[in-house]
Image (cartoon, rainbow over all chains, first blue to last red; front, side, top):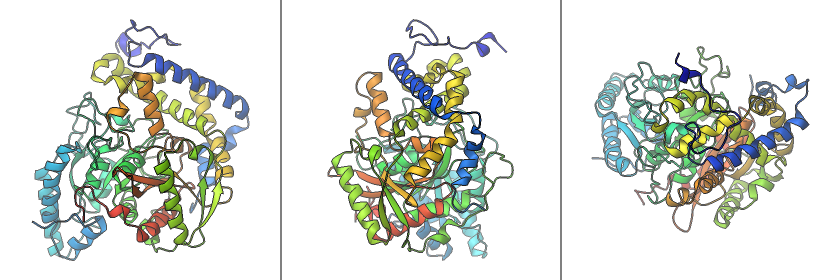
Length: 70
Length: 472
């Protein structure tokens, strides 16, 4: 395995257009989207995630509300 | 040579079965259209003439001997270049995977082979399935068969173009955020995204394993039902697919939808709708009422926009995970737009991604308790705007392009996070002659109900029969 295989882009990512890893199309637009989504998820998670959430396992809920489950 | 443009998939299968025409005749006709119209509208990557004709001859020979492979005996199909087909190049619309020729076929391709399909080759798609518009910087974008200046929709762009243009009689696509429903809607055909994991994805190149769904695009709901029956069998080698009993979806199509309750989604689904789209939706629901359903108002949960954000986050993190090594080693083999969208995924923390997935069951329960409180099926637009031109989807700075991509997929994307099945049904033509559609959204595993309603609608309307090249 080469060093490149394990090297990750910097986190949190910096919007540095000179950086090889982030010399990318739409860096500023991406930054705005990820910032917004991070805030939305954080807000939703505070209201919804509890230790008893195993009852809300996604596959289980799909089947719970499912039609013609045999 | 005969003209098969007025036939749908079921009609072609019946004609071959009854000996009214041969599989070779139909296959030659389809290959001719793929070679001409398919190239012109950028519907195809690779046409497999030799194997297709050999297969058609074999199907004809079997028929003469009184043998039938199944429900697709001798029917020419072609599929998105996302699925492994033994001996055919499968590069998912990328440069990175160019020259990749799998030894084995994907599970669903094997099911279609067993049912008797004649596979004509691989169809155009957006690079790595990552564009709802049909954009592909390496091979050129898909062109809408109704007007080549407009987008075809994507990422199953070739499937939409080829079926609408009567180059093949059905196609399997993939849908991670609308990629079956959007090209179906924009090209004027029917397309169903099944429930999450209802169809085994073994042998399909993934984009976001938590969201990816595979399903058919074809002229009619009945055609889709036949294809879904063929690919919907349980895969004992795929621990992730839902082990449900095989269903004959076509057997449910009796035209009787009396007593079903359809909820017309308001709120988020009616905001900023193009007026022509709104008028088309009103006409569609009026027709469904005449078919015998009762119609109620349905209210989506207030967090619909947030559900799109969750879907977008899961998609980009999973795509970034799958593509990280290539992005670092061969960044210039990606188009700028696609690489930029994948790289978004590096900007989320593990906690945010885990939170997005941890909330999925609870948010689905909220959606079911709210939107489905008083109905069996939901009714919504597939997209809020008329099909834009290719130029409109590439104009401006990257922020403008992202915004347009977001708007095209706005009504479709969230359903992949929720895992719900949805079908896109052609429902009209705009003043400029471009197809419009509505979307029916079902409870988990309710594909049979969705197909039954769409089929009942199509018994009363002709929008699925209208073809861009063969106007009657």
